[in-house]
Length: 191
Image (tube, rainbow, N blue to C red; front, side):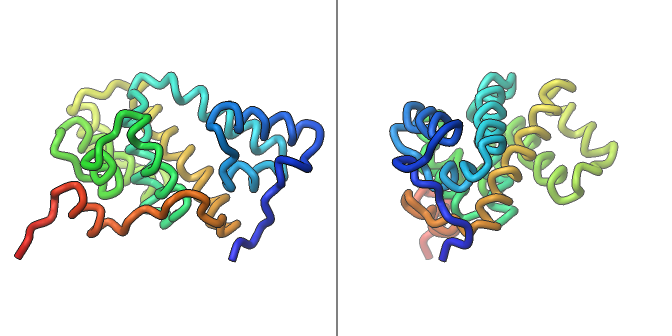
Protein backbone atom coordinates (compact mmCIF):
# COMPACT_ATOMS: atom_id res chain seq x y z
CA UNK A 1 0.00 0.00 0.00
CA UNK A 2 1.29 3.43 -0.93
CA UNK A 3 2.53 5.25 2.19
CA UNK A 4 2.53 8.84 0.84
CA UNK A 5 -0.49 10.16 -1.01
CA UNK A 6 -0.43 11.10 -4.67
CA UNK A 7 -1.44 14.63 -5.59
CA UNK A 8 -4.45 14.59 -7.91
CA UNK A 9 -3.62 16.67 -11.01
CA UNK A 10 -7.32 17.53 -11.43
CA UNK A 11 -7.53 19.24 -8.03
CA UNK A 12 -3.97 20.60 -7.80
CA UNK A 13 -3.56 24.36 -7.75
CA UNK A 14 -0.88 26.95 -8.32
CA UNK A 15 2.69 25.81 -8.97
CA UNK A 16 1.75 22.15 -8.32
CA UNK A 17 -0.82 22.32 -11.12
CA UNK A 18 1.63 24.03 -13.51
CA UNK A 19 4.28 21.36 -12.91
CA UNK A 20 1.85 18.47 -13.20
CA UNK A 21 0.55 19.97 -16.46
CA UNK A 22 4.16 20.09 -17.69
CA UNK A 23 4.56 16.39 -16.86
CA UNK A 24 1.25 15.60 -18.62
CA UNK A 25 2.38 17.49 -21.73
CA UNK A 26 5.78 15.79 -21.79
CA UNK A 27 4.67 12.21 -21.13
CA UNK A 28 1.01 12.08 -22.07
CA UNK A 29 0.25 11.03 -18.49
CA UNK A 30 1.25 11.95 -14.96
CA UNK A 31 3.08 9.00 -13.38
CA UNK A 32 2.44 8.33 -9.70
CA UNK A 33 6.06 9.20 -8.96
CA UNK A 34 5.47 12.78 -10.18
CA UNK A 35 2.23 12.90 -8.21
CA UNK A 36 4.14 12.01 -5.04
CA UNK A 37 6.88 14.55 -5.77
CA UNK A 38 4.21 17.21 -6.38
CA UNK A 39 3.66 17.48 -2.61
CA UNK A 40 6.71 19.72 -2.84
CA UNK A 41 6.76 21.85 -5.98
CA UNK A 42 10.45 22.50 -5.26
CA UNK A 43 11.16 18.75 -5.44
CA UNK A 44 9.13 18.14 -8.60
CA UNK A 45 10.64 21.17 -10.33
CA UNK A 46 14.14 20.08 -9.29
CA UNK A 47 13.51 16.60 -10.66
CA UNK A 48 12.18 17.93 -13.98
CA UNK A 49 15.07 20.37 -14.39
CA UNK A 50 17.65 17.76 -13.37
CA UNK A 51 16.18 15.17 -15.77
CA UNK A 52 16.01 17.63 -18.66
CA UNK A 53 19.61 18.75 -18.14
CA UNK A 54 20.87 15.17 -18.01
CA UNK A 55 19.14 14.54 -21.32
CA UNK A 56 22.01 16.56 -22.82
CA UNK A 57 24.76 14.46 -21.20
CA UNK A 58 27.69 13.47 -23.41
CA UNK A 59 27.36 9.83 -22.26
CA UNK A 60 24.07 9.73 -24.17
CA UNK A 61 20.52 8.91 -23.19
CA UNK A 62 21.04 5.17 -23.61
CA UNK A 63 23.91 4.86 -21.12
CA UNK A 64 22.32 7.41 -18.79
CA UNK A 65 19.21 5.21 -18.61
CA UNK A 66 21.25 2.04 -18.19
CA UNK A 67 23.05 3.60 -15.22
CA UNK A 68 19.69 4.61 -13.70
CA UNK A 69 18.43 1.03 -14.26
CA UNK A 70 21.51 -0.34 -12.51
CA UNK A 71 20.98 2.08 -9.63
CA UNK A 72 17.28 1.22 -9.39
CA UNK A 73 18.03 -2.49 -9.33
CA UNK A 74 20.67 -2.01 -6.61
CA UNK A 75 18.28 0.13 -4.56
CA UNK A 76 15.43 -2.39 -5.07
CA UNK A 77 13.15 0.32 -6.47
CA UNK A 78 10.43 -1.63 -8.26
CA UNK A 79 8.73 1.57 -9.44
CA UNK A 80 11.83 3.05 -11.09
CA UNK A 81 12.98 -0.27 -12.56
CA UNK A 82 9.50 -0.75 -14.03
CA UNK A 83 9.12 2.72 -15.50
CA UNK A 84 12.67 2.77 -16.89
CA UNK A 85 12.07 -0.66 -18.47
CA UNK A 86 8.75 0.51 -19.92
CA UNK A 87 10.22 3.63 -21.55
CA UNK A 88 13.46 1.92 -22.58
CA UNK A 89 12.60 1.67 -26.30
CA UNK A 90 12.05 5.45 -26.51
CA UNK A 91 15.54 5.90 -25.04
CA UNK A 92 17.01 3.56 -27.65
CA UNK A 93 17.39 0.53 -25.38
CA UNK A 94 16.75 -3.03 -26.48
CA UNK A 95 15.75 -5.84 -24.09
CA UNK A 96 19.45 -6.81 -23.93
CA UNK A 97 20.40 -3.20 -23.07
CA UNK A 98 17.82 -3.13 -20.26
CA UNK A 99 19.15 -6.41 -18.88
CA UNK A 100 22.73 -5.10 -19.10
CA UNK A 101 21.69 -2.03 -17.13
CA UNK A 102 19.83 -4.01 -14.50
CA UNK A 103 22.70 -6.48 -13.99
CA UNK A 104 25.57 -4.02 -14.60
CA UNK A 105 26.99 -6.53 -17.04
CA UNK A 106 27.30 -5.70 -20.74
CA UNK A 107 29.03 -7.43 -23.62
CA UNK A 108 30.10 -3.99 -24.84
CA UNK A 109 33.40 -3.23 -23.07
CA UNK A 110 32.79 0.49 -22.73
CA UNK A 111 29.22 0.11 -21.43
CA UNK A 112 30.33 -2.64 -19.07
CA UNK A 113 33.04 -0.42 -17.60
CA UNK A 114 30.58 2.44 -17.08
CA UNK A 115 27.99 0.19 -15.42
CA UNK A 116 30.54 -1.42 -13.13
CA UNK A 117 31.89 2.01 -12.22
CA UNK A 118 28.34 3.23 -11.49
CA UNK A 119 27.74 0.24 -9.20
CA UNK A 120 31.03 0.96 -7.43
CA UNK A 121 30.04 4.61 -6.96
CA UNK A 122 26.73 3.55 -5.42
CA UNK A 123 28.09 0.78 -3.20
CA UNK A 124 30.96 2.95 -1.89
CA UNK A 125 28.93 6.16 -1.50
CA UNK A 126 31.24 7.67 -4.11
CA UNK A 127 34.48 6.63 -2.40
CA UNK A 128 35.83 4.71 -5.38
CA UNK A 129 39.49 3.80 -5.47
CA UNK A 130 42.15 4.84 -7.97
CA UNK A 131 41.91 1.51 -9.79
CA UNK A 132 38.21 2.03 -10.46
CA UNK A 133 38.90 5.50 -11.89
CA UNK A 134 41.71 4.08 -14.06
CA UNK A 135 39.44 1.29 -15.33
CA UNK A 136 36.65 3.62 -16.43
CA UNK A 137 39.19 5.98 -18.04
CA UNK A 138 40.83 3.03 -19.83
CA UNK A 139 37.41 2.25 -21.33
CA UNK A 140 37.47 5.69 -22.96
CA UNK A 141 35.59 7.92 -20.52
CA UNK A 142 36.94 11.40 -19.86
CA UNK A 143 36.52 13.39 -16.66
CA UNK A 144 33.30 15.05 -17.85
CA UNK A 145 31.73 11.70 -18.74
CA UNK A 146 32.78 10.25 -15.38
CA UNK A 147 31.01 13.15 -13.67
CA UNK A 148 27.94 12.36 -15.79
CA UNK A 149 28.00 8.69 -14.79
CA UNK A 150 28.14 9.72 -11.13
CA UNK A 151 25.32 12.19 -11.71
CA UNK A 152 23.20 9.50 -13.39
CA UNK A 153 23.63 7.41 -10.23
CA UNK A 154 22.55 10.40 -8.12
CA UNK A 155 19.48 11.05 -10.28
CA UNK A 156 18.59 7.37 -9.97
CA UNK A 157 18.91 7.57 -6.19
CA UNK A 158 16.77 10.75 -6.14
CA UNK A 159 13.78 8.90 -7.60
CA UNK A 160 14.56 5.53 -5.99
CA UNK A 161 14.59 6.91 -2.48
CA UNK A 162 11.39 8.92 -2.90
CA UNK A 163 9.56 5.98 -4.44
CA UNK A 164 10.90 3.49 -1.88
CA UNK A 165 9.86 5.76 1.01
CA UNK A 166 6.43 6.37 -0.54
CA UNK A 167 5.98 2.74 -1.68
CA UNK A 168 4.66 4.36 -4.85
CA UNK A 169 1.99 2.21 -6.49
CA UNK A 170 2.83 1.03 -9.98
CA UNK A 171 0.80 2.68 -12.71
CA UNK A 172 2.79 0.95 -15.43
CA UNK A 173 3.48 -2.77 -15.99
CA UNK A 174 5.83 -4.26 -13.40
CA UNK A 175 9.31 -5.11 -14.65
CA UNK A 176 9.95 -8.82 -14.75
CA UNK A 177 12.44 -10.16 -12.20
CA UNK A 178 15.97 -10.28 -13.62
CA UNK A 179 16.01 -14.07 -14.29
CA UNK A 180 12.76 -13.78 -16.27
CA UNK A 181 14.01 -10.67 -18.05
CA UNK A 182 17.19 -12.56 -18.98
CA UNK A 183 15.12 -15.27 -20.61
CA UNK A 184 13.01 -12.71 -22.48
CA UNK A 185 16.14 -11.17 -23.96
CA UNK A 186 17.48 -14.60 -24.97
CA UNK A 187 20.27 -14.62 -22.39
CA UNK A 188 19.14 -17.71 -20.48
CA UNK A 189 19.84 -21.28 -21.46
CA UNK A 190 17.29 -24.04 -21.77
CA UNK A 191 18.25 -27.23 -19.97
